[in-house]
Length: 95
Image (cartoon, rainbow, N blue to C red; front, side, top):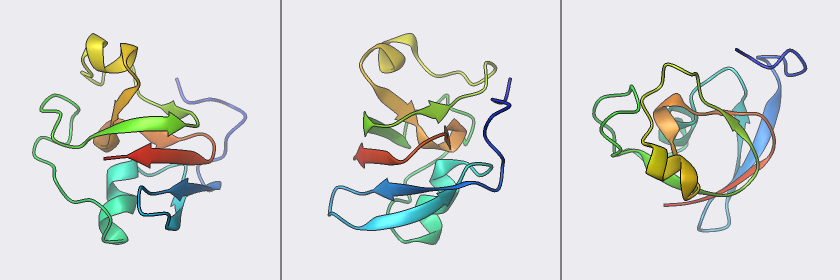
């Protein structure tokens, strides 16, 4: 299901709530990028089920595999689970 027009090596800018901007590769879960940059570290299942890594997507687009078990209500209200979200554009997030 990966979008054909986005290379896994493509890097996008993620703007954090504190105003910092970090670079995130498309082919890596957003949670990994956040942890590596000391921005966010709360997680448990890493499969989208527990929602501990849930973030508000203010702007941008992410890919979430169909098999990711993200709650419908989270999707409906603009929340993503960073462990199963891959950036497809520059993002702005809140946590």
